[in-house]
Length: 309
Length: 87
Image 1 (cartoon, rainbow over the protein chains, first blue to last red):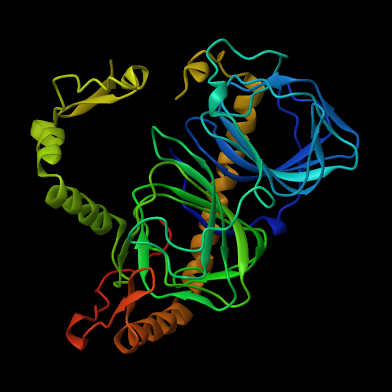
Image 2: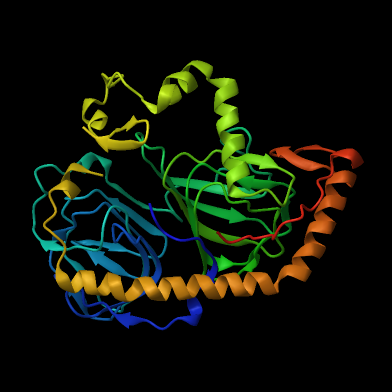
């Protein structure tokens, strides 16, 4: 993904604009949180006017939405605050209506926002990957770290979506009042967050208030962490979130990247040797017997260039 | 990329215009953030100093609530290069 490092940003300083992209009906408004310069993938905060209506339809991009306030009716179901949907590309969503209006976060993961009227799924849509739940009502907070090394007590998580292929996740997290965690962290993945309510603090960026947002590319230091009065936020990653903790505030992304690579070198020497052997990851495998289709999407490396085949 | 996304028709010119209009705005947003973060430099130096004191006194979080005290000889020194937090 090619989005710049946007951190910190507070969307409350921005005005809504009319959302008039081809295929979408009138009556919705948007603020751009971040935008991928190559693919058009984007994260938006959207407002739907009272009386908004959209026919059933699908997008050519995987998309996610999270209701912040108000109500949105999808088919005959009414979604209120905290409702989260992951809609795989090509899966048709029922007719949308909003009697009183609502605000939501919307994420188009693979490409620009697209909408095609349809009451049936695209023939290649992976409908079983759909997630549809209320994050506030339908699941408990996880109060302890799910994996090691993990966050300190007081950072609670609800895992809303997990991609079994890429390990990308979408999650709700909350820091309790007086939360603190004294380390510097970075990850192999891009990380994104929108503060639904409350303020958190990081050593590099200071306070992130309600409406605060970041899109942070991989290997960028963040933390130590604190929250005086607590906060609740929606987070996303585009791959597995592994916590590389340390205590040097001044390392660069390049140094962090090298440290992460050294970890693989130490822990998986044979895999490392295979991946980097003369910059050439042939033979063209290994075939994944369980996920044959996914193999088509693996990029093959050829010393000074790479390509799909 | 999903198989469905591979089937998407070419991008509508109006959508391309929309993207082209927003990219410079996003660049300007990042420039402003960098400026704001640079302006926070002196305050951030104090935060870092307090952090380095805390990890010697109470420890840094190695994993969850497990902490390890950092010895005086382990405390990192600020390198002689420009310090950035936004990349």
